[in-house]
Length: 406
Picture 1 (cartoon, one colour):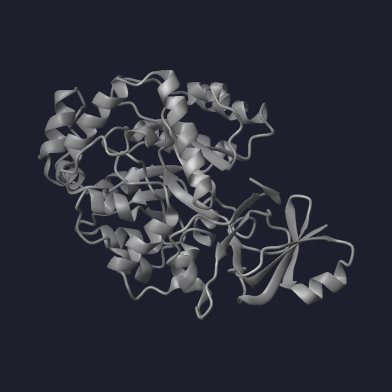
Picture 2 (cartoon, rainbow, N blue to C red; picture 1 turned 135 degrees about the vertical axis):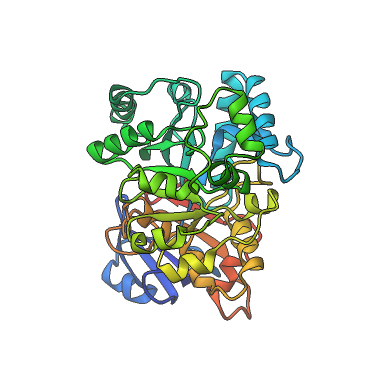
């Protein structure tokens, strides 16, 4: 048994604890409470005192593309989504396997530096994973699937990818499926992915309603994204009548529990379609990526009123300055200053854990949860520990995964 003490402990599922501690048995939290109380219960436990610090759950990045970490600053901001897609495709053609592996490794290191202990990563080149060492943080690898250029996917391919993790028990995390987006992935492939996600019990995520160009393409059958995709051979017969959200929902293409990334554009009738589904899907917002593309206001208040849980992600360094969830919380706060710090912290802990179907097992300090936690500075005179966390601008003092220093 090990005890970790700090001036403030933030369990998140229960009130803050002054002079608190967590008791760790193996890889899980055994108990959370006041230090004196736990010390008396476990008199022979080894004690690590983190001093004048805040101890809280490790952060969970709900959407990331580690493949593109090396593209930081490589694409100038223009506001044009289709121009960005063209440029990123050009850059991808210049990268070797070694470049991608170095990019993924660097991204994992940056995430860990800023207190992320779990990441939901979209992997476009899963064949490279056999060359990766075990990641230092908990990683859910979402196999990216698209068929815009006749790429073939079958249930056997998905089952084979799942077997990859069964053969690597030392890797923390798991495997999921990610049909890329409705403009690159056909309804038939979405339905296959839904079937496989349900059959194998894997999480499912997709980009949806990301840009005004995507909305224009589907709702009006025109615009820069429409023209670009038509020029590379996409069948555009599904465009011109529906919003992207209606396109997928009416095709029954999304499984219960789908993690919908971006959701920046709501068209006529979308709110009514989404209203009865608040308990079926979760939503991920990427604040710095949103700013990078100079998008209009994120419809947070609408989603909150409908009852959706919102998580935060960084997206990639191809559209962000870094992989720092504290920076994402601060950017979100500039746009939504009335959101309480505790609610913001839930967006990078409890909400993404629930989106993975792992609520209570990650993203909280509680008995039975995995012992993933970080410690942050806590200055004298700061009355609200949640405020201190959200406004934090320094790397954590310590990062722990499964009760061990990561």
